Image (tube, rainbow, N blue to C red; front, side):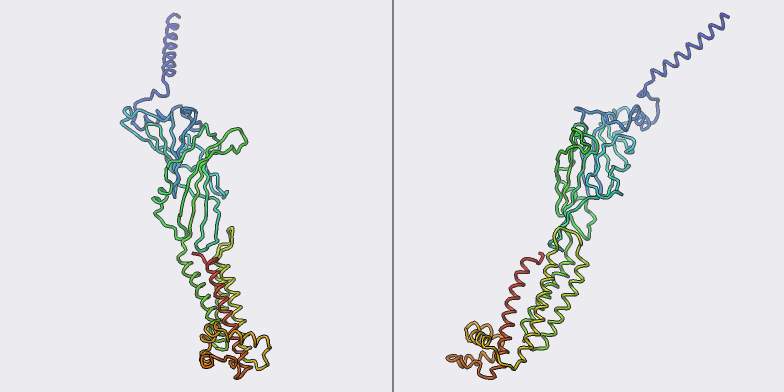
Length: 407
C-alpha cells in the first residue's frame, strides 16, 4: 500500500512539472527551425490582423501615394519588428495583406457599384523596423466633369477622393507620399493613351466630418486630374472642313450671279454642310456642361450657305427682269455707282466695262445708266446686293472664327 502511494506521488509530480513547463513556454519562446519560419512564428504569435496596434499618440501614420496603374500604402506596425541578427540578417518579409492589419483606405469617389473600393489582396513587404509597404493594382472609377466647349480640344476634370472609411483622424493620420505627384505620373505613364493625355494633376489635403454622423473627423486626400484630348485627327478633319466650307460660301457670293459655276458651288456647299453636320453629331460626345462651339460654327455656317443659295437664285431672277425698275431702287443704285466707293469697289471689280465708261465720262456720270436702262439697272442692282452680301458674310465669318472656332 505504501509503495502504491509513492508511485502515484511520483506520477503526479511528473505531470505537474510538465504542466509548469508548458505554462512557462511562452509564444515567443520558439523551437529551433529555419530563420524564415522562426521569424514568422515570432512575428505572428499573439497577433490579431483585425486589431490596429497602438502607436505613439494613438495614431497610425499612413502614407498614400497614387500612381497611374496602382497606389501604394505605407505605415508602421509596432508589433512587426525584429532584430536582424537573431534571424540570419533577414531585413524584410513578404506577407499577404490578409495576414496583417491593413488600414481601410478606400476610394470615396467611386461611382460604379461593381467596383470593389477596398484594397484587394496583395503581397506586402514588411521590414525589420516594422514598416509595411503594400502596392495593389486597381482600377480608378470616379466622376469626371466634362467640358466639350472647345472640342476637339476639350478637357475632362476627374477627381479621386481617398480616405479611411471608419477610422478617425486621431487613429489614422493620412499623408501623401510624394511631394510632386505630376512627376510620378509622368514617370509611370509608359503606355500612352491614344485618346487622352494627362495635362495636369494636383493633390490636396483636408479634414472632413465623419460620414457616420459621430463627433470625429477623417483625413482626406483629393487628386484632381486634368485630361486633355489628343485632337490632331479631329482638328485636321473638322477644323479644316470648316475653313473649306467657309471659303466655298464666300466664293459663291463672289462669282457672277448668273454664272452656272456659282449655282453649282452654292448647291454643293449647302449639301456638304448637311453631310458634315450629320457626321459631326456622331463624333461629338453627348455629355458635358456646354455644347461644343464647333457644331455651333457649323450650324451658323449652314445658315449662311442657305442664305447664299437663296440669294443666288434671287439675283439670277433679277438679272433676267425686263420690267420697269422702281424709282427708289434706281435712284439708290445710281447714287451708289456714281460715288467713288461704287466706282472703286463695285464697278471696277465686278464690271470693268462700266469702269472704263465711267473714266471716259468722268465729268458727267449722269449717262451711266442710259444704255439698256431696264436691264442694266436690274443687273447693277444685283451686283450691288451681291457685293454687300459678300462683305457682310465675310464680316460675320470673321466674328464666327473669333468666337466659335476651337484653337
